[in-house]
Amino acid sequence: MKKLSILFFLVMFSSLSYAQSQFMLYSMKGNVSVVENNVTSKAKVGKMLDSKAILKIANGGSVTLVCNEAAMFSIVKAGNYPLSKFNDSCQAGRSSVSANYVKYVWAQMTKASVDAGSNRKAYMNTVGAVTRNVNNIWIDSKLDTVNYAGGDFPLSWKCYSEAKEFEVQLYTQDNIATPFFSTYVTKLKINIPDLVAKMKPGNSYFWNAAVKGEMNDDLKVLNYVSKEKFDEVINIINNQKPGGEAPAEEAYRTAFMLEDAHYLADALKYYSKAAQLEPNSILYRSTLMSFKKDYEIK
Image (cartoon, rainbow, N blue to C red):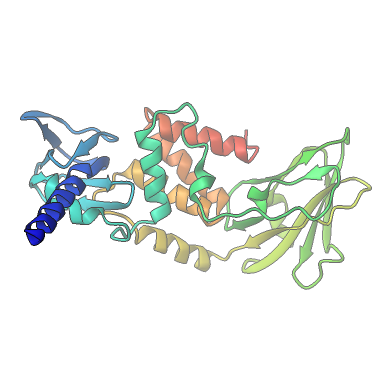
C-alpha cells in the first residue's frame, strides 16, 4: 500500500509539472498556426502557449520557442507538433543561446511595460566599478569598459559644476600616471572616432574626463579591438543562433549579446537594425530609445 501511495504521488507530481509547462513563441518563419481547444489560429510572436497546444508548421516554415523562462529551442521541419512532447526541452541548460538572453526576452515579451528594454543590464554579466574619488565629473559605470571595433559612438559624463570646458585624457596600460594624449571639448561627451587616430588596434587604453584645470583619477577602460578579434566575437554570437530565428529577432539577440560584451557601437547598429526590420515592435523600438538615452546618443 505504501508503494502504491509513493507511485501515486510521483504520477501526480509529474502531471503537475507537465501542466505547468509554458511556451512563448519567440520567432517564426513561413506559415505557422496554433491549435488550442480545437480552434486554429495564426501564430503570433510573443504568444503564450501551454502544453496542450499544437503547432502546425507548413513546408518551409520554422519556429523558435522559449519555455518556462529556462530554455530556447527550434522546430525547423514541417508537421504538426503537440507541445506536450517538448517538456524535456524546457530544462535549463538545454539551450545553446545565452541563458541571460533567454531570461531577458521571456521577461520582456511576457510582461507589457512602457519601460520595455530599459532593464537590460539586470540580465547582463556587467558589474560597475566603484568610483575612486569625488570630483565634479561622474562617468557612468556602464562605460567602465568599452570594446571598440569601429563605428560612431560617444564617451559621455555628467558634470556637477557650471564648467564649460572639459579635458579628455588617454593613458596607456603601462603608464597611468601621465596621459599620452589630451584634448579639450565643450560638450559632455567625445566621439570615439576623435580618439582612434591616437590608438592602435589590438591595444588597451584608459581614459577619463575632467573639468578643465581639475584632476580626475577615475579611469575607464577603452579597448581598441582588432578586426580579427571582433570577427571571432561575431562568430561566437552567430553560432548561438537558433534554427527558427527571423532576421529581426537575430538582430536584436546579436545587439543584446554585443552590449553584454561591451561592444557598444556595434550593439547600437544591431538594435537599430532590429527596429528597422520590425518597426511595429514596441520592444525593439523602446530598447533602441532606451539604449540611446543610456549612452547620450541623439
